[in-house]
Length: 125
Image 1 (cartoon, rainbow, N blue to C red):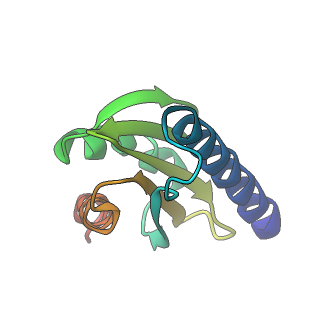
Image 2: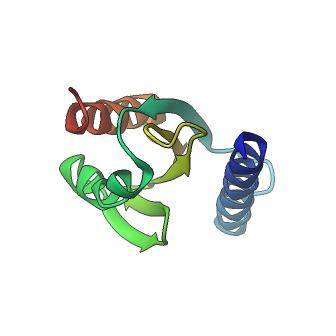
Image 3: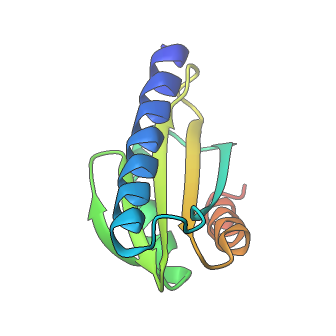
């Protein structure tokens, strides 16, 4: 099960990266630099179903506007940066694998770290 969750997460992130890169190439010159990317994965001490409702709330706390969301993910925008968070089921089911992915021309590391800190704050025991 762990490999299928990681495989699905990787495919989702690859699709998002491809979509972001394709969109950027349409509005940028051919020789433009690719957008910056910041990525992290962590385990949060909460069951999968309790992770999902916090995605949009955490984005809002950090100034992001949610554009789309699904049953286990949410995508948001802040200025010219885009961010995605994905809740993945872990083998033990008492923890959730949280994946955070931020891309854009702004300071993506600061944004990713802020979103990560907000999610960790929400589930601190």
